[in-house]
Image (cartoon, rainbow, N blue to C red; front, side, top):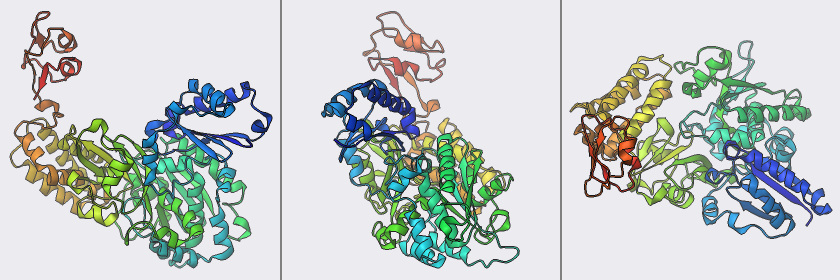
Length: 594
C-alpha cells in the first residue's frame, strides 16, 4: 500500500449534507490512529465538487493505490469505522457502499464537462493541472492561430448550452470579423453564470467543481475573437461558486494563464467577476450587459447583436458556463472526438439537473439524442414510490411539458422543439400522477411574471393577465372561454415580447393545454383531478372507517370537526377551510377528499 486518497463531496449538496464535518472527521481519525508510516506519507484528503447523485450525499471516495471504493450517506460518526476497518484493516464497510442504483445512474452518462467534477480539488490549481488542465491553452498559443481555434470549434458542432443553441464557432467568427478601429478596438468575452431557472443547478455545480475549465475556455475564446478583457457574471447568492471562482482566477493569474503576456505569447487577457442581484431576466444577454454597465438589467431590441455592439458598445461574445467548459476538452481531444457524440445537428453532450418525482435526483451529463425514457428510468431509476409518470418539464419556466407517450423522443434541440418544449439551460423536472398540470403551469408563470423586467407591454401586462386567469381557474372561478383566452393571449405574448423571457413565458401554459386540456376542463367544472387545488376540494369523513380517535378534531384549525370519542366524526363544510390537516393526520383513511 503506497498511496491513499480520500475525496469528500463538497459541492453545495455535499456541504448541506454535512461534508465539511465528514472531511474534518477523516482528518482527526487518521491523526488519532496508528496509520502505517508509508501510508501516512502518501495520504491526501481532498474536497471535490458535485459527484452527480446528490440524493446520496455525503459521497466519499477512498482510493488505495489503484482501487477506488465509494461510500454513500456518510456522516461524521461513521468515519472512524471506515478508517479502522477499511483503511487500516483492508476490509471496506460493505453496508455503506454505494448500491447498484449508483452504478446504473452513471452507466449511460458520457462526461465531458463533468469529467473532472467530483474528481479534482476545485480550490487547487495543481489538481486541475494534474488531469491535463491548461494543456489546451498551451496548445493554442504554441500551435494555433485564432482562425484555427474558431475552425476547430465550428467543426465540433458545439452549440450554446445556455438555451438558444446558437453555434458557438459561428458566434466567435462573427465577433472576430469585426475590424478593430478607434471606436471598436476593445473586445470582450463574458461568461453568463446567471443561472436562475427553478430546479436548475448545472452551471453552479460546474463552477463549484471545476472553475479552471471555465477560465480556460474564456482564455481560448478571448484569443480566438481578440478580446483582452472578460467578465464572469454570476449570482451573489451562489457564495461557494463565487469563492472558488475567485480562488481559481487568482491562482491562474499567478501561474500566468491569465494576465499580461500569457505564457510568453504576447497575448493579454484578464477576468473580472461581476455579481448579479438575482434577476432572472439578466440571463438574457443584453440585460446582462446593461447590468455589468451599472444600469438596470433590462433587455434591448436586437439587432445590433452583442457580437457587433455589446458591452459599452464594443464587440462582445457571451457564452454560458457549460459552453465555455467544453472548449478545453475540444481543443485537446479534437473536434472529431466531440462530434462523435450526439446527433447530426446536436453534437456532443448536455448537462441536465434531473429533479422532481424521480428516485435518483442529481446532476447528469448525457449524449445529445439519448431518449427521455433512458434518462428517467435507466439513469433516474424511475418514479418515486412507483407512481405513474405524468409529464416531464424540460427547459425550466421557458420550456414545456412532455407526456409519457413521448418517452421515446430524443433529447436534442430539434426533437424537443417539435413537441413544444426546449432543451433550455438543462432543467428537467419529473412530474407524477399527484401533480396538477394547471397548478404546474401557474407555478412557472408566477415565476416568469414576477421576474419580468416590465420594459415591454406584452410581457409586463400579458403575463399578469395569464396568471390572473390561471388563478381564477384553480380557485374554481374559471369562465367558459378561459381556455381559448389563454391560448390566444399566450400566442400574443410569445410573438410580441421584446426578449426571450416574454417570448417563452407562455410555453408551460400552452403545452399543458395542448396535452392536458381535460384537466383544464375539469377545473372549469369545479374539480381538480390530482386533488391539488385547495379551493376545489371537499373534505368529508367516511363513517365506516372512522374510529373516533379525535386526531382530526384536534388538528382542525377552524373547529369544523365535531364528534364524540369512539364515535364517527363529522366535518361542517361551511366552516371547513380546506387546509387538509384532517386528511394528513388520519391513520385510518377515514377522511375523504374530492
